[in-house]
Amino acid sequence: MVFSYTPRLRAVLNRSKKLRRRASSMYLFATRNGTPHTTGGFNSAWRRLKVKVGLSDIHFHDIRAKALTDAKRKGGSDYAQALGNHASVDTTENYIKTREVNIVEPLY
Image 1 (cartoon, rainbow, N blue to C red):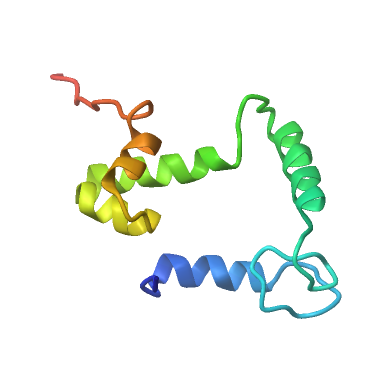
Image 2 (image 1 turned 45 degrees about the vertical axis):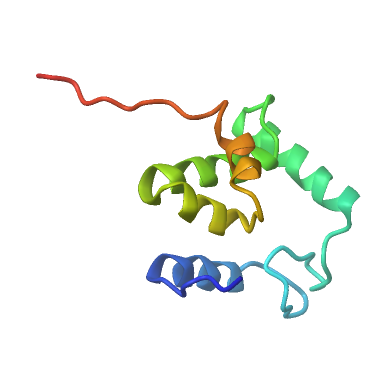
């Protein structure tokens, strides 16, 4: 899968390059030494972030579900399926079905 190198993605990657690290790295999510996080290290960082922002009932995979829900809303099921890199639209719908809501504009 190849993602378009949009201005927003470029901005995120440029910001990530400015993070304090002792060594440069090819990994977007890397330790200060430039190595990939271990599962335990990533989970520890995620727990600290949740405390810092005051959220307790949130999981990293919720970000994927939110992205696929937004993708379906903007570009349809096929677009969301492609973004999720799923062979079956049923797999994509499993991420979306419990999170999809209708957004309505007020009349005033």
